[in-house]
Image (cartoon, rainbow, N blue to C red; front, side, top):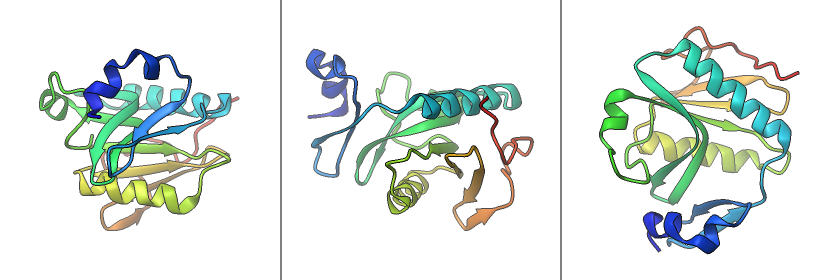
Length: 160
C-alpha cells in the first residue's frame, strides 16, 4: 500500500493506533500514546510556534524514509520545505527539525534509528524529549548543547 492509500483507507482511519510503515511497505501499528506523551507533544509544538517564524510546527508528521513512513512526534518545517510538498500526504524531504517524545515502551536504539533516518532525509536537527521533559539536541555531526535553528528553545519542557 502507498501512504496515500493508507491515509484514505476508512478501516485504518478508524483505528486508534499510530500507523507507520516498514521498509517493505507493511503497515505497522503502535498503541496510542499516553496522555503525558501528548502533553509534551503539545508543549514542544507550542514553543516552536512561539519561537520560530516562517514555518509551521506540526505533530505526527509523516516522513518517507528508507525504512518506510515514520511519523515524527513533532516537526517544524520552513515555508520553503512545506511548499515542496503541496499535495503530497507525506514529506519526501524531512522537515528541518524532527522531535521524538520518549514513551515508557520506547527502546533507545529505535529512537536513535529514527534520528538516523530523519537525517538521511534532510533533517537539520533531531531533538529527543525524555520522560521528564529534558530535551537533547542533535545535528548530523552529533550532540549539540542547544538548537542552532531555534536557540531560544529550552533544554527542559515543563508539563504540569
